[in-house]
Image 1 (cartoon, helix red, strand yellow):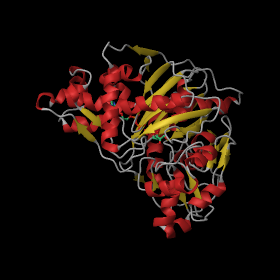
Image 2: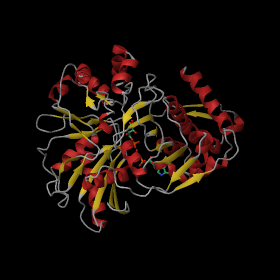
Image 3: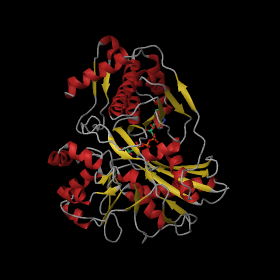
Image 4: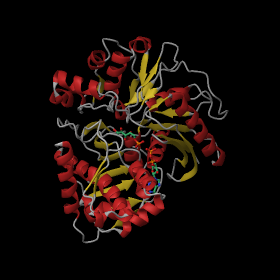
Length: 477
Ligand SMILES: Nc1ncnc2c1ncn2[C@@H]1O[C@H](COP(=O)(O)OP(=O)(O)O)[C@@H](O)[C@H]1O
Ligand SMILES: O=C(CO)[C@@H](O)[C@H](O)COP(=O)(O)O
């Protein structure tokens, strides 16, 4: 039996799984938390990665032959000429570069950005973070010799490590690599051509031209660890989930982690000048149009905290309320928002009357508000040609019974919930097995079984209309 490891280094934690490369069966798992915050030393991800890998390896029936890392997208990791971090990494949900995003888009207009890079950059994109660094920390910017994404950094560190020894490795001489999926979230890559756009990078970064990682194909190897384990290309976490789920045409994924994402695999690149849909690449040589919100699972934890309960308590409360939450509407922009592009927004609760101020209604308004933003994302995907037949609901907050009950009402298409699993890590493991096999197609692992969620006959359109009306009233769009 050949064993492979898939690693998901996402916002809140690292998860590592060991999988039978022949069958796709998960045999062992490990997990380690990340520090909180939108600015984190990449070293901390490396420490969490080694911890999660050690836990998974300890329960595995043997050594792994290949590894791949899928990581949170967009994060800016800057290294100096000696390979040391110039400053802590800025994450996808760090909104400080919003003014630089506005300036960059203003220079050439949203159409040109969408045409060249597939996306109109907002503060999440790496290119706007580089513009922020050039403007606010020019001395640091001058020291940047290479720019990596989180998964690039971890793959590069693994190339200098011995998996069996689990030691804090010396830095490696290996050449940094990336893949088209993660590269497509930088803002200086052309999804249509599959190559970097150095002029876009230099323009944003004050004329500086740091080294960029080599872009690998879907089944290419990035190298080997010091003890000979094959390293696959890796990818972004959403691309990893798409590979782990084995998406078919008509499948749209709604992932409810720290971010809320809505995406589908497409044959052709997209270029949405409104900026709602990011025109990413996937991890198989195709494309991954995607809408991302900044506020998903943590809206539920914040609301539970407000109500003095836990996530199970929040679920029970939300399920006890009627659709529409008695007229309460929550715009859940607790960490600012990315789609719509409102980086400085805060959350808004409206419609309060003495009769509807119950914990049940507030819990329901939180679930509805979070999901309405993603229902808008689904509508935006339709605008770029995606024809959803069903939604696959994954991510930490898909474990919520209230979320699973409300989603079919608001999405207006059948909702299936695959059995809870680490689909990002599974996609990374599938990529590792693919690189190990050297085959033309990824290994044919079984598609995860899914439970179909049935909507009751309440009117989801009315809930969405109330949400849209409040958003227009408060934010004018
Ligand atoms: N039963 C549940 N109900 C609601 N949210 C949940 C539940 N279980 C986990 N979560 C939330 O899921 C989130 C973690 O999901 P995950 O997809 O791993 O996020 P990320 O990939 O961004 O690190 C946490 O915010 C956690 O509170
Ligand atoms: O920025 C995006 C997608 O464009 C986010 O989806 C990040 O990739 C973080 O993902 P999670 O940690 O929420 O899974």
